[in-house]
Image 1 (cartoon, rainbow, N blue to C red):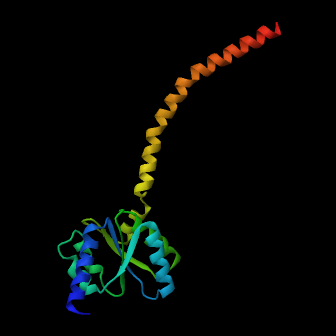
Image 2: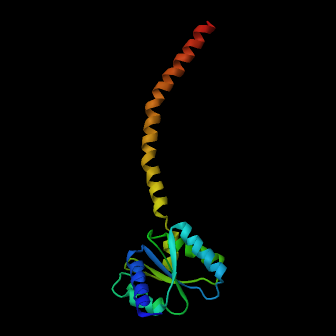
Image 3: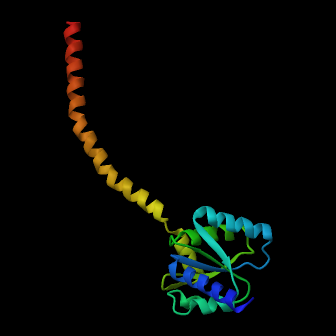
Length: 172
């Protein structure tokens, strides 16, 4: 690889490390091309990405980024999974690692916070941004729904009473 190409890779990796909500580092020794393609596809569908790079270049790119503490994880055949959403990459990696024991999660980084194996598991267990927004919308919408029901209830009660009075009048 020429120097210019290496510099481009370092710059790209630097962007990944500084802009991503979460970066997960895993060993992928033994994964076939089909399995790696499947892993990349799952990550892309969820909104994340996968990058394989030389560890030496990744360590250079880590310098001065919030994720610099994960440099020790970059040994052997490593793959970087990352996403803007702080949970997406961790969820996909954990789900894939459950199905395929050849993908071994080493750890990662969430901003300046270094994550060990259990940390990545904990992040994967968190709800995603969309799930949180839906939950908050449901919580905010419930009182309005209850209020609308309470406002409509007296009218329904009056209609029921009038109907009962009318039925009694017809019966008499």
